[in-house]
Image (cartoon, rainbow, N blue to C red; front, side):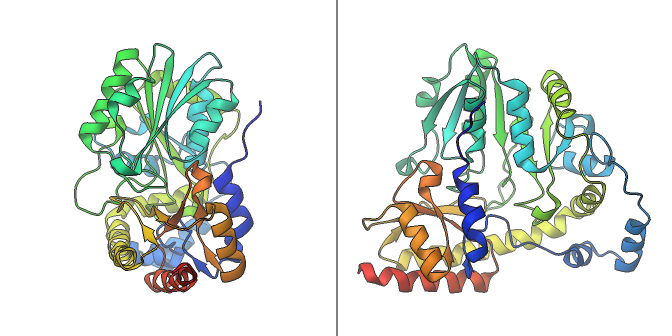
Length: 374
């Protein structure tokens, strides 16, 4: 098995710690354990004492029951036995693709997206057909074009909604259109829903598992819930065959997730209303700031994101995205992610869900840098 280097992760590994202005972060501004207890309205001393009594054995093999029960509340038609926990959404995506895709299969993937969603099936020897979203179409798929890639050999259609890195949000109509394509060939749909819920309006963003019996949702505690340090994700699906296959493969690489991690995650999702209110307020306020900045910055344009914490900023001068981002981080302390990491050029990915003052300062510093191109 040969796998392509994971461009975005390699970039972050090398450069994130150098950031003075971290406008590359993709999670909503992270919270501490103190913050979590405060948001949840818990008695800190009692809660910590309860945790201190826990024996540090393996966690629940298939996931903490309370945590799984709370996960089901994020969907319409899922029960706890249709959920299994993983080491982050990155572990969930890997487990699904590793479990379901064989070398003779075809996978249809939509770009731009998180690279593992197409590099992993490629590494297994599967044929990966990639459909590139267009800025001119607001990074939303043309279903007629996607249909051309789907065949009787298609095992999985892989999508990412809300989209990383564009921030585009597929509507229920578009998702149902993809479901219709999958049904024609009896294919699974794997939807990375890591940013689901962080919308700019109060519209409900449907999950693929509530629209399609062979839909598979992956998500995590990182982006939406500001708890990346727990390293927890999950797979949710109503398809028992897919879940059974994932559980067989999971025995070889997981056993269980961390006992204390899942206890804290259960607390967070028990009080999801409070955390979501905090995080929606932040992403909506910060996007207004970013949008105003873009409208007043002559060298930058974008497709305004509809959801998530990130988007692509396009620039009008002659420099590769890698060289631009390298200059910004090495010489100015400003962290973006090169569009090249997502197979796109003349753009950078910005994360705008950091602390509001940090976003304002980072954008001001970027404007200073851009004046050389006037």
